[in-house]
Length: 161
Image 1: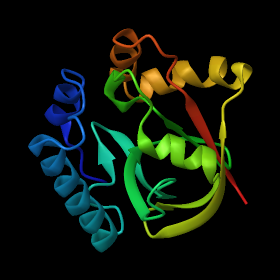
Image 2 (image 1 turned 180 degrees about the vertical axis):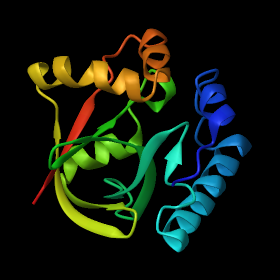
Image 3 (image 1 turned 180 degrees about the horizontal axis):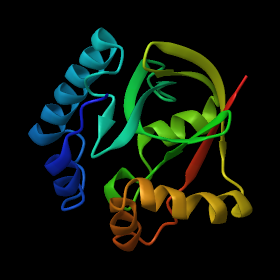
């Protein structure tokens, strides 16, 4: 069974993500790299869940830098599709990976040891109405994140290619 980070998940809803360029952001980036390495080394047994929600590795390419990147993100299985949330902790802007996927929607994800090709698409209003309650049940902090921002947090459906 994947390891859960219990208290850290509850604490994560208490603050906004660190700002790019700050020491806290560099520390966050280092922790993300360690989580990604550990996830891959263990096939998702370690780092494969966060506060009881499953985690995947999202591949994306920086739209400005052209650099390949990997982001560990919570996800909701939805049949053959997978749903991720561009919450960025309720920050006023969308996360960089969201902008990167809008420019290059064809990408790959890793779930455990499986790597699959997907196409990213922002959920339609009907899909959002159906998926949002399930996402709040999966990870209640999404409600806190939505409350702290004026933007509507996008839901991204990753459809298997």
